[in-house]
Amino acid sequence: MNHDEQALLSAWIDGELSQDERARVEAHLPGCASCRGDLDGLRFVKTRLARADRRAMPPDLIAGIEAAVARPWHLRWFPVLGRSTVLVPAGMVAAAGLIVGLWLGMTNNDPDQFVPLEPLLAAHARYEAEALLPEDTMVAARYSYHLANADGEDQQQ
Amino acid sequence: MSRSPEGFSELIRKCGEKAFNLAFRLSGNEPDARDLVQEAFVRAYAHFETYDETRPFETWLFRILHNVYLDGVRRFSHSRTVSLDAPAPVEDSTWEEIIPSDDPEPAAGMMRREADGLLQKALGLIPLHYRTAVVLCDMEGMSYEEIGKIMSCPVGTVRSRIHQGRQLLRQAFENLERGGLAQ
Image (cartoon, rainbow over all chains, first blue to last red; front, side, top):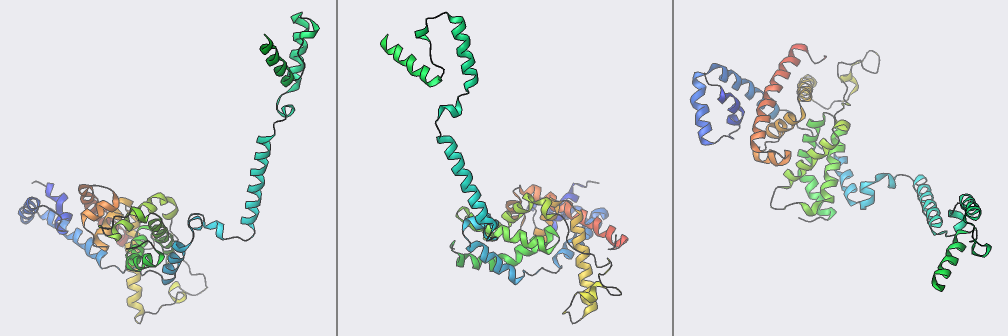
């Protein structure tokens, strides 16, 4: 007995088969008690679902959705922004402080703030001891001064 | 159809009922169904320019709702319902006495609620893809082609999900009716 038709039974109930498939199922059913039994079970489920109570949409939900879509986009996606009169302003002040702090940190060009002096001084002392160069060619300890002098010497040469 | 809040209100009223029923049957409880429907409508409004107005709005909305549910399936899959067989919070009383009913025939209403509870419990026992396909077909009366668009899958897949879903539901009903609603 061929039971390939069993897999087509739901679509047959729903009228979703092609003409050929429908003819196959209808030719198979009279001779197959197993498929007829399955068909009863499938119809029972379909009927039970179709007759189930429908859940009514709560009226306040409609109003809630209308209010949600009428809100500005930033409140739609981040509703927390509209909930607090204390935390949100405090958070905004903290964020502004952080931005200003970062900006000040990035625009501070004082080389003493960025160039570690200790290793430079150590390197200078080592250079002075090992290079055996005349005193007047010695570069200053400050890195920026050294660079300025080096540029000047290059230009003179 | 416009994207203005007024024009959109018309769509909420037209499709909200079906969307809420689908959301309830997927999530199994009212609070999650409310969240699901609201989020689906808000997303639909935000992306309204991508809606093809030659197709039914309902199919597009259901597709969004289904995606919202899949995105938050952990958040929406817990049950916030209380069994009517659980102990009532007030001594010597039952849930039926505590929950007000406007049903003129309380016994019939109770039976209907019990049958609905059994149905929802059975739906909750089958995998999500089967549940969605069967609910869209048998409760919302949608065609296999529409269901395929909502679930982003071919019609052949819809056919097999509906068939297997009904078979699993039948088994679930049998098991629940044998074991009783209390288990």
